[in-house]
Length: 459
Ligand SMILES: [Zn+2]
Image (spheres, rainbow, N blue to C red):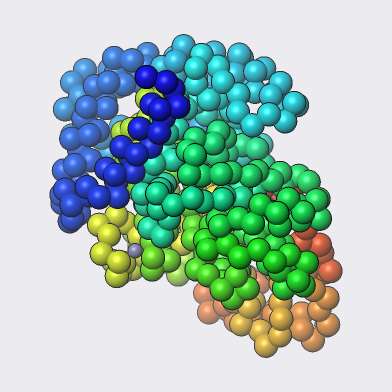
């Protein structure tokens, strides 16, 4: 069988499986039982094929069933542990050093996919500066594409699609075009937006997949009639999509903006037709490390610990991310048994801490401040809020604000702090900032540069 044929078959198989044969788990209980069955097989497989997991799990038990029963008690690993043990963790005989030199060479040549030992390998850029490695076999890659197509309901595998993808060259899903029904055109976000225009116009995409900052730039080009494309699907990836940016984009494009929640570790969630992101619980078990944050009911904010029961090249089991997610309060009206998210807040490192009047550190989500600020009675484009110290914030906005406008926003924030008995920080403003200058970086609206000492008391 040719590789191309095998790939197409795998895409189709995964597509049909996830699109048409899901009634096995209509309820949460059925889903849990399904996950447990899959995970049990995968734990046994990983212990046989990944030296790292064999050693790691044997500290607790040699029996996969025992391991599954104590699953939540097994200490999670993180990216650092994964990278330190990469050579024994992956099952393709890859060495970290090889992957790095191979990928860096491909990056310099600006090639899209780098293959090593028959697997697609690459490095993620990551916001923390630490680069992670991804390894995906052809089969996993095809399954990945089939899965996304199955979960995105308005797209059909049987229709021709032209997909414009904007990325910083670290995204595994679109590394290699795999289906004749899907034509891909890649745009590098490092390039100047004006250079996209011509090829985007002649390609005339039916689907645009891009980070929200890029979507905003495209939206502005559309509004200014510098571009006249009419996609039937818009997907936001790679960065947190703020509710107000979403509303704005939906208005400009006249379409619902979909979201893929994905990272180097895979596709973790996709939005449904109600616009809610549902976790990919049919391929990953998500355990939750609960986080206490102001204004969020206990149990709803959490850090996900993934156990992917489909990945084999680089198995990830009990793998802790550093994202913070917030569960939706009510089940989604679309009827999916997969957990729905209220929102993805961002990285754990981006929680803000302020002092209360007893000198205790209180965590709050920085994005709350963005949301409060937008209640002001004028147009405001917040680009970034950075906590610089326990008592100071640096706020970058795209427009120019008068003194009275700054005061109005400050008062809205002050009220929030007063209601929670928190010491109000000093606010510094950076105005008239250029949104496009953010395109080349992984854009983060909420940034904490704060380092809390070991003696910090957090309540
Ligand atoms: Zn839903």
